[in-house]
Length: 328
Ligand code: NAD
Image (cartoon, rainbow, N blue to C red; front, side, top):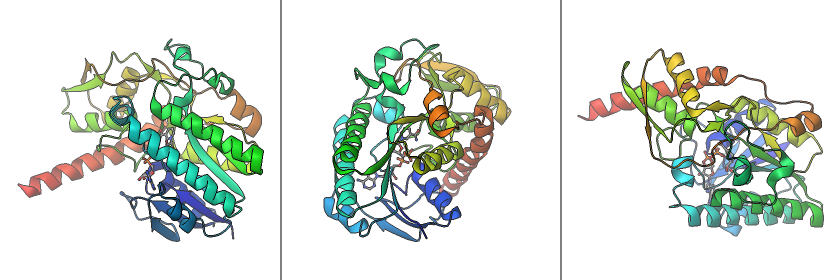
């Protein structure tokens, strides 16, 4: 039986990854600061621990796991990453986690380690035209990410690559582009655009209004969680150790994203544009490399993913409302 350790297993992607690994008959240990929030974990063993502490890392990596998935990070959506208020924590906490985990994995002779990097590593200067952003993997340098979150991810990518070069560790590095789906942050200040907009639409009455940060013309692509997990699986099974994009190439403006969600909800709402933290002007995944190296790239449409996500967030909004009504 294959054994895997999932760091960040209480979070959005980590909790889904645990489910997927269990479907594949792995023995799985999860580790996180917190338990999963929206459903019980399927992990065989779940440790609550702070991976900024090297002793905790050594404690959870107590054998040579076949695969370690390092997804733990201090992160969130634009409201968390682009205000500047959390920069020190983001850099310090996530860098410590990666430094400690790599050392613990090296000492225990872990066979393979997957690292979740981000599209946020790409330079700002290539993402100013919303219709033509560049995220070819080769364009990461000269580096100029637009957030400290992106700089930490870039530093950590290099750390994993250095452990590969110097110690022969098998590393796999994915640059995720806006992953979304059910059972992720939706109202805790760390939610990203798809979840935030699903929540706003679910909360609004038909004919009402929702607020969007910026002019709504900024572009992004969004990848449904199942496609992300498929990409991780294929990457880990491959022998490709360079950073690679895992994202969708279906680029939309934020206004278009909001309109698809309104359509799914069957609501007509007015969009009010507001000043707010934004990030780069445009971003899309470039899937040439993943197609070439893995012979695969995501194909699910944005709408299909949102059709699976909206009902879950709508149910959360309703449950919260009922809870509040009972309190009064
Ligand atoms: P998430 O915030 O839901 O999950 C991260 C988990 O890490 C959380 O459960 C958190 O409690 C845990 N964690 C944080 N600090 C910790 C610590 N000191 N010790 C132990 N656990 C700790 O985020 P996610 O969306 O599931 O993202 C997973 C990974 O993928 C992250 O590394 C993130 O940077 C990366 N990523 C995600 C996206 C996305 O769109 N979701 C995009 C690019 C990259």
